[in-house]
Length: 327
Image 1 (cartoon, rainbow, N blue to C red):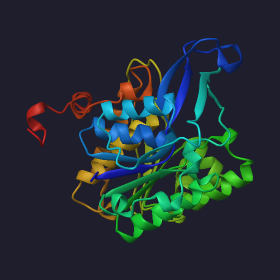
Image 2 (image 1 turned 90 degrees about the vertical axis):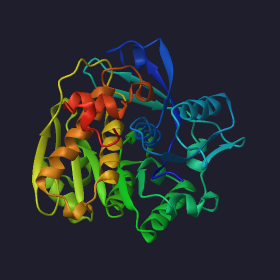
Image 3 (image 1 turned 90 degrees about the horizontal axis):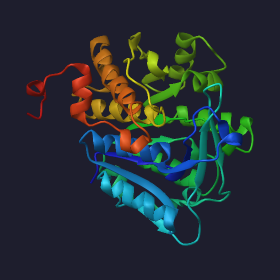
Image 4 (image 1 turned 180 degrees about the vertical axis):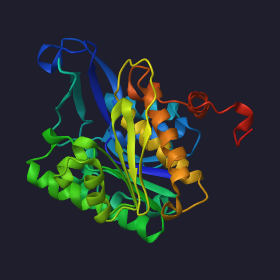
């Protein structure tokens, strides 16, 4: 059974190959496997840890592509469902002239939103060490109930629960509903990773330390806020700090946040301390590792093909091979 299990959308990103053109003006797109929890599972596997994905896709050409992609990167697919009743989601992605990612989702009732509670395999979750989820599966039923049940199963089994809100306004009926359910998710996790934009959306606060404090008050023991190439902030009950990012040649930033989460979860899995016991030196090491995983993903094109190995992360961190625990 996998050590780290993620639950959420597995979809096809149709990524514009024309940077800065936006969706209106882009005419050329490239197919890629996507979905934040999917990328996290692939990122964990790339770092050499057993990862599994709970997801539902269409029994169509796109679903088959996703399954093959995940098999190739050795993600466990024992809870990956293919259904003939619904289609795999397609997300068109382009970067605007201002450098802002632009998304358009094209399947209204896609397979990923149709995962039902009675399709869950409790042992698949309970036998893991860490459970990770996002907010997209909180948008509609039946997958919302499936997500909430999975969180309950993980909590009852004593797993560390991780959450990445991954705000996508076009997918929600309205922002009030998005705020309600995304905020509900904060209270269900032990560890949360957000962007500055997501922090402000949830808390209404722009100051990082105050916003992170508001998130921490909602329940998580560890709050991380990513800042792109500048690195990240972190906050626990005992400490607030920041870790600088890495200067790398950037090709594409798709999946960098998911690689960051994967690195964070792998480090926490292998750490011998509970999250509440982490000291500042531990947190500096943790988020240097996560930042390195995110930075390396930016050096390639496409999320999953660019996810780094542990050796690549260690090389960027300056850790010699003979110092690796596995050697």
